[in-house]
Image (cartoon, rainbow, N blue to C red; front, side, top):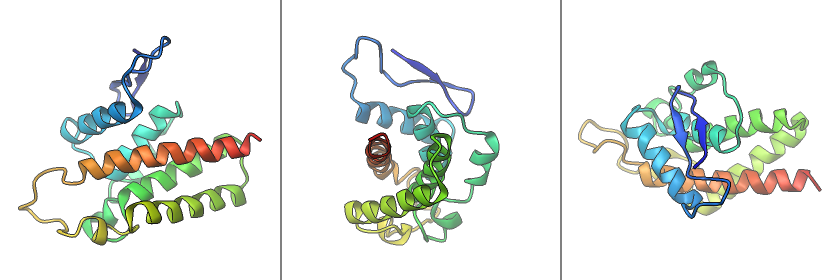
Length: 166
């Protein structure tokens, strides 16, 4: 099993090995999201950035993670979904590292937002999490959505980077 150094100083076991063990990417994402939510108690935006950075083996400075502290629906205001915000931040970082232009990065972000909205029905936490944020909520209500959103983002980024390599 491949272990990748995690952002929070934890080694993430993604279950991806040289012989291609049969733990699916979906299962790996599910396990890592659960760990980040329940062990580290971090929000969806930071979870998206961390998971994507580990999946794409891209270093992320701690300052980036801190910048996403309030990006869970705009600090709970229920505006843009933190999964979208975290992914857009990662797309900018990753595509810049690949040498893409600002216009290419902006275009990839626009396309991601459009694709996410079509796939999930909205970009807004208000629609994706209709109960909002209250003290009566069970912890990490969006865990399943987070797993699906990160898998979607992962596949999207793979597709976009293949387009650029043509």
